[in-house]
Length: 246
Image 1 (tube, rainbow, N blue to C red):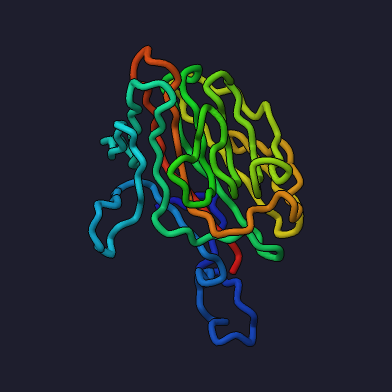
Image 2 (image 1 turned 90 degrees about the vertical axis):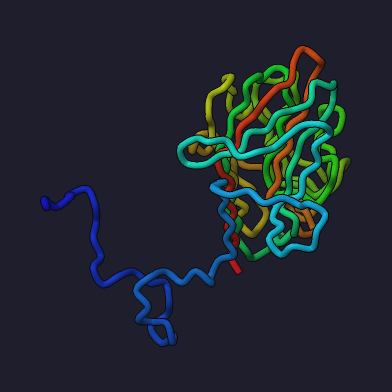
């Protein structure tokens, strides 16, 4: 077969281990250096009231539904109830990410919303809470991620320790288009800044100093809120990725 000249080849592998490490000759990157979560939603197991070890996501539905949708690449279809201010959300059942000085953290997700003007959106890392969105606003403390109120067409990025003096945000991040996929991502530098991007384009940063940095363990989370009763809105979550230095 002809060689693909656009690919750089390392036939002996690549490693990030020190030369005097026991794993020095391991020809792949050491996965234990990062705590990584990635869900492409080829499967979706939810809390069902049992003690099954397979439980992965806990839902708060308020008459909405979350289910796999048969699309290439895997995705979840979120259907909201046609009730004003009703939220439909899911969080990883165990909160296992603590944003810590000295440890870099990376987050990325891909999603779309059928009706931008009538849907609240929240996605990122959040404290376990049954009301991530309340009255078209961020309803939880301890959150780093993206939020949009139904009255807006652009996202905001938050790093949030509490609801008052401990919340820092940037607005006007990316204009959303109905039923069109987009990506959101952020990077906490492990010092005092959180950088954010829309559709893989870095936009800016906000202070993530101690006054604004969540200080409890967080879980990958998403939440959508219904605005009005003109019809049940829908959203699709394609994937969620998180990785943090150990």
